[in-house]
Every structure is written in structure tokens, then in C-alpha cells.
Image (cartoon, rainbow, N blue to C red; front, top):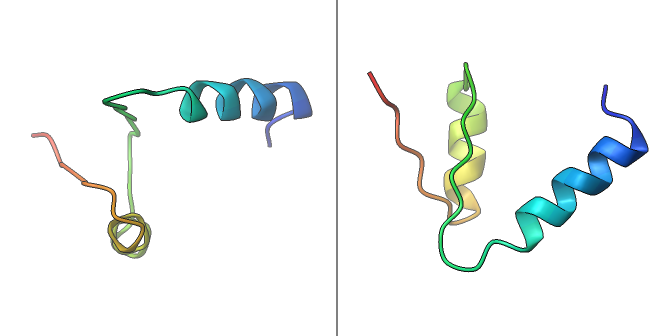
Length: 47
């Protein structure tokens, strides 16, 4: 679980993206992928 400071830093980083934002994660479930797409985010799986 992230500390409040880690959450704040993540929020600032995500909210300040101007044009492009790339987020990398080692795993992503199908349900989470669907949720992200429902928010209008593009999900790309790399080989």
C-alpha cells in the first residue's frame, strides 16, 4: 500500500501530463484493462 506522500507524488505526476502519458505495469488483468478502456484510455500490450 502506498503512503500518503507516494499517493500525492503519483497524483501530481499523472495530473501534470500535457500531451502523452505512458504507464507501465508488469501485469494487467482483463477486467482492469476493460475498466481503463471505459475511461477512454488506450491500452497497448507489448510483447
